[in-house]
Image 1 (cartoon, rainbow, N blue to C red):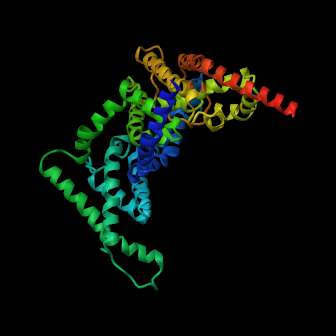
Image 2 (cartoon, rainbow, N blue to C red):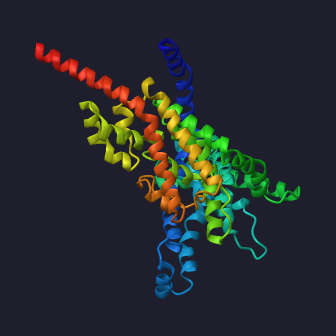
Image 3 (tube, one colour):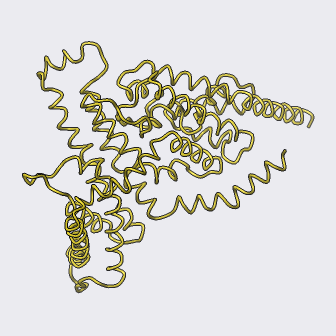
Length: 434
């Protein structure tokens, strides 16, 4: 049995880990991951105003109407339009910025050109207005494509000296402005021609094409049961071998889950049925109790039930941070990383809990997440309550998940704790004998 484990571990370390590390360091995926991470504060701020629109407290609606009038929901919506409705518009800048920086190019210039190219593609309404929905989650996949192409056009022209060169005596800020002229013309012209061709062919707009061909199929897979299940499995397989699984998987899945969250948000605000079970808050607020691996369950066992000094001291240091989803003390203190003894429960606990959360939501036992994106450090139970607009059933499901994870971890924890205790006793006897 040990040989099989050793062979499996060697295979992962020699074959899978290098590939995963290569994927994690891929410039385009890094740019998407970092670009979307930079808009998270904007989304969290918008989520606060969604909560303020419908805070699940008795008498809250009457209180707010007494202060702000019957239109307080509309007035709070101005802030939501200024945050959620700019997801794509901001992402098209941040992703191009990060990709250009990954290639050691001027990120600001690439980001601004990407922003211009995105606006070039936007189909206006009949009265000439810009549709807000396309600046938000509905335009996110277009924003990703535009930003990646723009950064490459900019990089190509700069690396091939296709730009205006000014004397060294000219101030750098002026030089950079002129450097971006030719690449800027090329970027805008490229996307303008794309728009002309799409309109000439009678295909509507680039946004409708991307949604049907790319966005729709990706979202169908990413928000389905098996898409989420595989994502959870891969995240934890990577973590076992010291690779930040959430970063690797998030580079691919974050656009899908963020778009799904915004669809839920729009439906919730409109009083319509919420469409998606799987969305970003499904993981952040309902599933990751103590971070990846549902480590809060293991943290409770180590802190309150350990007999070995090593585990008891680790619990003193790591328990409180784990409540706030900062689980590195346990990841590297037990350790979880590269530890075959913890492999089975570390994979099993999140997969079992994923099924619990998914199917209780699917069968209507608990409501779907509303699309509110909360800070990832928010403690369990509070985040579940807020993410489902005040559902105590969601909190109960989290409690069940925590107890299940503790039950899964317990036998493995007990073995490791006894091993630590035996080593400590043997060391104490050896020191006493010497």
